[in-house]
Length: 256
Image (tube, rainbow, N blue to C red; front, side, top):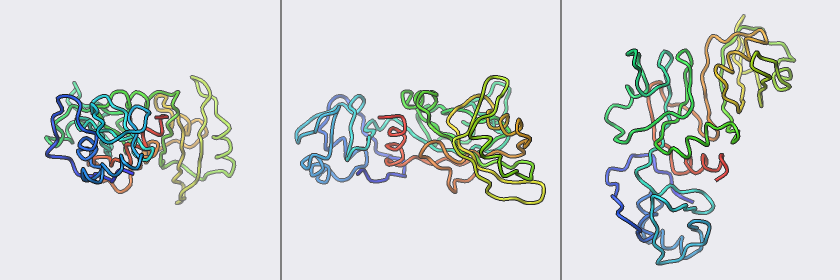
């Protein structure tokens, strides 16, 4: 299984064509070349669906590589970031109206041009994914892949016992029915409550509209997970590089 690689690489190679597979694996952070040779020898690496052999050469930009069944992105030009979007920031890389946008938080730390996966309205906060991998971004956003998203919401209380069942069965909105995959009450405090819900569709303002329709308008909304990627303790306005294992989990979430 590929090791985690949290730090950005400062010595990324420039590929000009096919390279020895063990060299490509080592450059992607799997391990030393000798360790990568051992993985290949033990038939733990596949390339484009076939078991790799020592001596194989691959093009990192096009080869589909799996190590122990997990997808490994060997093209070191591809970037995968998690960001905690603060409240009041628009979900665009740059804003023609001069409002604070996502690129304002990246500075010079990311040389590649990245794009956000999905959106959060300006009043919402939490997890966004940023990448220059257009194929993966498309799959993560496309409803047919059904990638779930989890939200923590502060709403008006108290919460009736049957609210979870009502939301999982489905609620009729002006643009059609909507439902959640799961719902739970996290905490209650006086006339407010914290609830967590997971759903896999991405209609505009769907979480706010859904909770407002059942009588519990949202005063604060934080997205805490996109598929297998969790916000965790990432501070507002900060970004981090996804680990190899997290990128592999994203590919698995969209069926690769």
